[in-house]
Image (cartoon, rainbow, N blue to C red; front, side, top):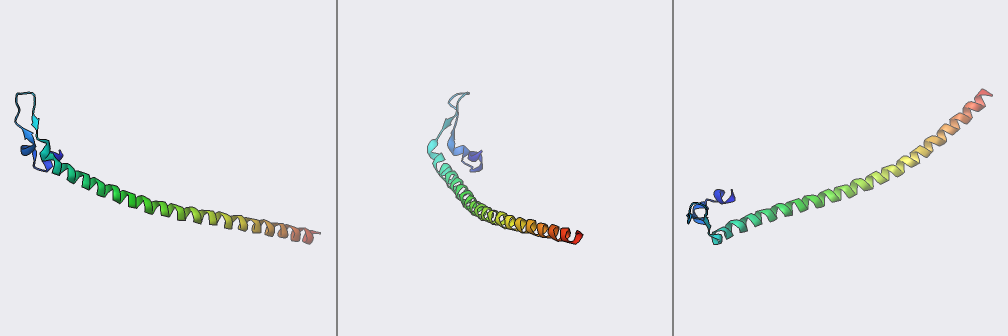
Length: 95
């Protein structure tokens, strides 16, 4: 397919020597393959960049989550203390 897209089909494929086999001029493929490798490398570099950004975001979110868990623990303790104080006050009021 890459051969057809590059319009090199006529230059790369050699007329059949017989009905079963085609010849191939591999030297004509070098520029096509080089371009394909360059394009592939650009894709890889772009993906690597995205992965680095995502890893950084994951670290940030993990850090925020850890901090939120700590804050929730403190808030839960405060709520428990307030509930105990309310219960004590209710007990005093009911006596």
